Length: 396
Image 1: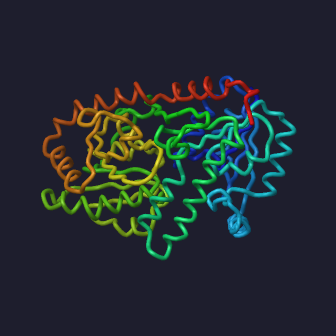
Image 2 (image 1 turned 135 degrees about the vertical axis):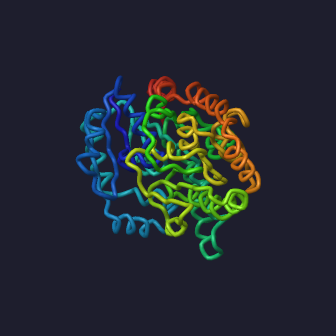
Image 3 (image 1 turned 60 degrees about the vertical axis):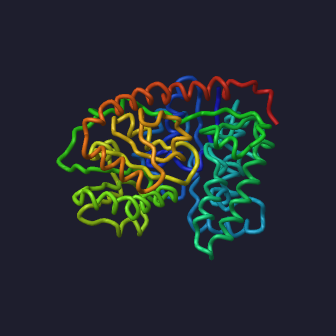
């Protein structure tokens, strides 16, 4: 098929979950389909970054929206029904470029990533599929619940606009995909519209315990993720301020590594002799290898946490929340450990640190679980067979 792909962000480097997902999908879809990538950018894309996609896509078209114009587009849409989260990526000049590209390549299918591509999809004719991925409205509701009094009304307003926008998208597309059943249910609780669940995958050849050598730096605990992403930085603050004091009361020398892009100022200030903050790793696997236990007290957010699956594939024992495991469906106490309260996390951590021999069986089971359930090949095959090869005449 001749496929036009609309990306709200250029899918490289792979420091964010949406970029990783799209890159892996494009990499595998390129074996059977001709792909034309139209990507919105707010920052320049280097030739080095472009090179990673050139062998995958038949053509790459970038449209740069300066930050000032993105802000102006949001301001212009203040009284529209379009959420700010969508307006930030929407631009009239980009729509003109996209229309010309659409006329030129005459795609069999248009594939848009996230509701951020929604305004573009609405204005194009043809068979259209949107990868909703996560329920953005749920994430915004959660942010509003934990926000300060002065920002809460705005976030609640944006959450309502996001929910209305998400529930309106089936009127403009032929099919939707989601990362998990939980996200699909949040957007379409009555399941009135055709949708397919496309989970993320893990490259288990790349992510394995012996894939990188361990340097001299080692830590007892580690957390890896985009440290500027709201659910992640709230998890880090919970870990450092609520869990670690309990751990340190029993094991004062316990060390913690926090690694990931865009750490907010609160996280940067956390660094001390027992807590290391690394804003960027050239090879993310080093972050996993540096730790003995992966701790992810994530209570917010939607979708599926790739960082958990990567740690499991690297045979690192994982302690995470009931909330996270709903999107993964691993077996508690066999594939990973579940904790929701600080005391539960601290108890699991101290037990594993005191008895590392207990780790082996769980980490082997965890890797087997990922290999069996989270293959990118299987995920993209589902996308291809149930979405891309769906009857093209069945579109709105």
